[in-house]
Length: 222
Image (cartoon, rainbow, N blue to C red):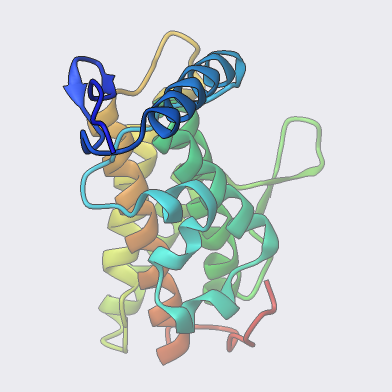
């Protein structure tokens, strides 16, 4: 077999020089056709975000929670977690923060309902019940913690959860409701991580139960 010139891509040799000439020519044609095809296909380059697995962020962000926690999540929460992960992967940082906050707020409302034994609503300006926002949920849970602590009864993880929800609301949830506020990658990664941790902690406390709950959680009742 007579060796011809090597096939090169971007100036680098990619084939053994002893491949036959027809094979090199066919591969060269293939590379050319592939380059043309890729130029017209909507291909996106997603950079890795910290230590997160790329495929998990793009498709199944809820898997960042423990497997035993997943049965406690509603379809609504799972959908928001997935959108938060996908937006983070594609550098849509403010959108990721928005969906992260919605996911944790959804779980926090249910946690509130188990703590107080009532719906997480208040009477709004229209005179009709309106859902409590994350900040209001955190404030009422914090008050509940103080009262339970004064009574010297079990508090579980209530205090830690109230503090975490308040921090998420103040640093992220409330600011990104304003159109002039945008999140950068660092903030988006932080709120995403805090969302996963907050959801996991609320589920852990619900699973453990305690006298600070007015209602016992039933798996999958969200």
